[in-house]
Amino acid sequence: MRLSNYFLPVSKEAPADAAIVSHQMMLRTGMIRQNGAGIYSWLPLGYRVLKRIEQIVREEMNRSGAIEMLMPTLQQADLWRESGRYEAYGDEMLRIKDRHDREMLYGPTNEELITDVFRAYVKSYKQLPLNLYHQQWKFRDERRPRFGVMRGREFLMKDAYSFDLTEEDARKAYRRMFCAYLNAFSRMGLTAIPMRADTGPIGGDLSHEFIILADTGESAVFCDRELLDLPAPGLDLDFSSDLTAIVEQRTKFYAATEEMHDAASFEALPEARRVSARGIEVGHIFYFGTKYSLPMNAVVQGPDGQMVPVQMGSYGIGVSRLVGGIIEASHDEHGIVWPDAVAPFPVGIINMRAGDTACDAACAALYDQFAKAGVAAMYDDTDEQAGGKFARMDLIGLPWQIVIGPKGLEKSTVELKRRKTGEKIEMSAEDALRKVLG
Ligand code: 5CA
Image (cartoon, rainbow, N blue to C red):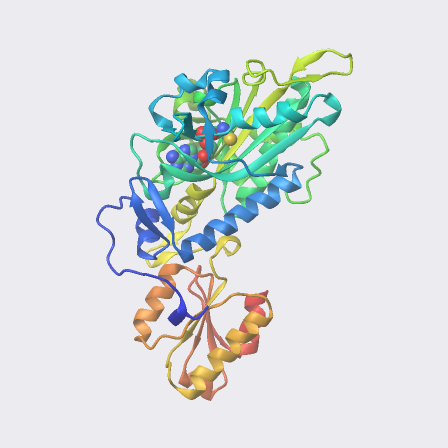
């Protein structure tokens, strides 16, 4: 992408109404534009990051055996009357009427809708286990939308729903999601800690929130330091194997959100291991048994011929929230520092003297080589001052920068900079290309 043809509305000033770093940086880098309280447009740079996160989530859901589909944003109120949640959900639900005066709502979550799909087709335990997911926009009329995409009203969620015959199988499905989440967050460069959590309006008695630690997190969290160093299960995990040990390796340590906090157990830990911090909830998983299947009559025939309500769980990831969460976890005083896996572009090429024949030719050649290798580079071909170009490239946080100027070209070199460490090395353009392509 040549910057002169791109849409990157970067601003120099920190916006006055943004209270946290990720919100400030997303506005300054032109990733998002607020269109209403808690409602945002995703501008080209932000949209690329959102898509990359979505893709990691998709790959890890698929790897765990879940199946992707898509449900609508608008739902019928009657479906929610069946589960009893239409009245119970309260003011967070955006209620709408269509031209026939039918009551509709913009989905804040999809337990009812997926249960309706399930009961239409699945009648036998032989079709189980089943886990269906989608990544779709949700609307919650939050009392206090704030911190940009962290607590929006419209936000992108991955929500998965598992269906099993027995409670034991449902707990296995829960463990598969638990492990898939650890892998997905780890791929994004995040340490997400599963914490026992309150189930709120989704319900059920087993639930974990996945929390990343950040000073600007909305909730107070408490955990054992040992949890911070545990590696993710790894992408070669066999999801058909017994995952109990992996889950227990984590759940045996103390980790709780404020609502579930038990000061006595926490203080029983040696002082050096007590982490009392703030956290951002990037995912939340629930096992709730027959809470929806029973009232909605989603039943399957078991091996003994009996019809029983199906056992369910639901599993959410805040896809749009993660964009802000990753910035909170990875930035410095100059701007964002994107982890390679979610960066909007892997590399930025800076032309130090746009208009100079040799510089233009060297930049264009390198840019084309990246394109041939299937890599979209961001090429700053503008004729602005070098200082401004460096600052902008640091601000948008691409993992690699390649600076091409007349002095280097005399020696046939370019400068390769790693955004994260600030390390700069002079080398040939071919070597820089190879290094970035890894
Ligand atoms: N049905 C269940 C699981 S699919 C559910 O809705 N769970 S949830 O309420 O915990 O939401 C799932 C995830 O969506 C949360 O962990 C959080 O990361 C994200 N999320 C929730 N509310 C918002 C919001 N207002 N803005 C941005 N992300 C949100």
